[in-house]
Length: 169
Image 1: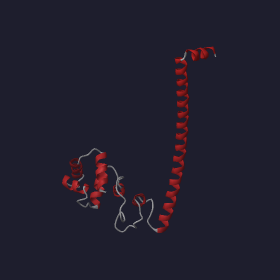
Image 2: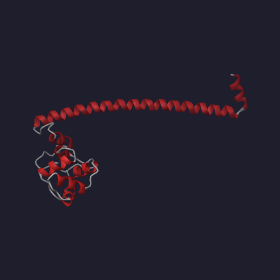
Image 3: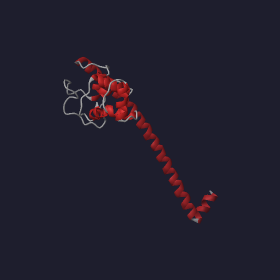
């Protein structure tokens, strides 16, 4: 979540001092030093802190809670204490956002729906890839025809007999 706070603060082009000032005006004072510690995971934040920061960053507490950095390595265990170790970042986000629950039936249904969406996306991407491949083939054919024409034209221009045949033909 600390990465999420940093990310959303930077998206809004706010410095830590500016965010601290906004929090003070919101009557929820958190010093710039305390905010910096939160962003470095060196300080815990309360639910009230989370709500105030989310409000000022024009997002929701759920978005801040469910943010998983793209470059984060796969965790060795669960994302959070009490979660099953096989809950991945996508399922965690869906659960935090209220799109699924973590009971067995809901997890199976959510996984099946996700697999269906991934199959659909895969089919769409394969179709795009085939189209791009066909377009590249057409460009390649065009390029090879052009290069043959230019080679033929160059050899005709270089030899007077070929030039004479080309003009008479």
